[in-house]
Amino acid sequence: MKIHTKAVHAGDRGKPGAQIPTATPIHTATSYFYETMEQLDRVFADEEKGYCYARYDNPSAAALETLLASLEGGDVALACASGMAALHTAIVAGLTDRRRSIVAANAMYGATVGLLMNVFEPSGVEVTFADVCDLEALRAAVARAKPGCIVMESISNPLLRVGAVDAVAAIAAEAGAALIVDNTFASPLLLRPLELGAMYSVHSVSKYLAGHGDVLGGAVMCKQEQGDALRALGRTIGPVLGPFECYLTMRGIKTFPLRMERQCANANLVAERLAVHPRVERVYFTGDAAHPDAETIRRQFPAGQTGAMIGFEIRDAARAEIFRFMDALQMIVRSTSLGDVHTMMLYPTMSSHRELSPKHRQRMGIRDNLVRLSVGIEAPEDILADLEQALGSL
Ligand SMILES: *Cc1c(COP(=O)(O)O)cnc(C)c1O
Figure 1 (cartoon, rainbow, N blue to C red):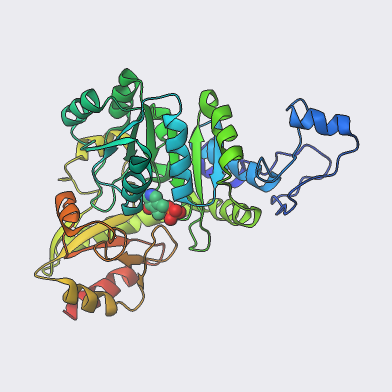
Figure 2: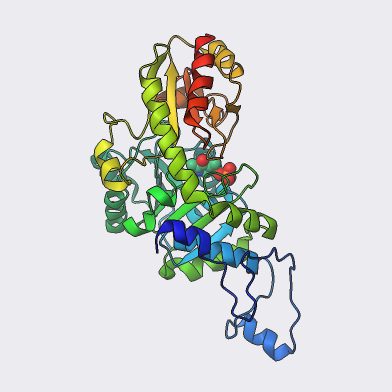
């Protein structure tokens, strides 16, 4: 089944019975009635299918998890309360019974860098950063650090570099490390890391999957081999997503492939126009023929669909000019998120990468004249017109 069909159908027919609702209901109960103690005992023992407590499982979450696993080409999913909760859970799962050492991509979401440096490192986990787009450098880092986990993003944030997931997975497998790929930016329409050898694929479902800017959520996906341990960890730590958010996410996902296709097509047009604009110094876009990872992008992503995020640097602009430019936007939303139906712009220096020191940002190549655009589903003429007028106001 194609991803467009899965997005509409998967998960919703999980309960056998005479009347299956076409939309999975919001199940708010934290616990359930049982006819007998015998039956409850069988449910606890997993000998009989059933639900016992909302931290363990919930029908609304189970439906969403079936859908997410299906989209990602995995067997098991754990819906989490946020992307960060999902990343935290995946890393804890990846480090279980492995060396307490992590090699992480050196270009990542600010909060993920924070999670590694402020949560895992102080708890005794060694953290090393490496360039996952330079396989020789990565091999050397892995040989030195002997990691239990390698963590990368499918499209890096905010400079949009693309590492070869299959090659990194091979390096991880050889080193006995678990590869965790944050697939938020690419989405399962473009890339399914589990099919390329990653052990865990992670999402902030708050972004493209839910897609409407009204849900905070995350998810971890894996194959059956890791499934039981992941779900057991979820039961113990309790990072689970509430039933209302599960419902909203599932509703959002039904149109996710359509939205993402439109967003990618819009981004192609916007990036092309920005590249020739006199006020724009440089454009970062995965569809650019001269992209440093063009070969990997061609191999990994569908033709013409390389993502809907664009970074661009404004010529001779410092913080004040960036503020003036972003304040002049009339339709495009000044925002901190991405992946929603509406086009959004963010200033990485001030938001996604605010917690990093200026030196750390500089090392990552994030300049103070860089803005990040998440292209929405609006008419491309209107997105372009708003960008043109705001650039013209400088
Ligand atoms: C937003 C985001 C996260 C964190 O997700 P939340 O849902 O905000 O917790 C992690 N990784 C990437 C790439 C993101 O864009």
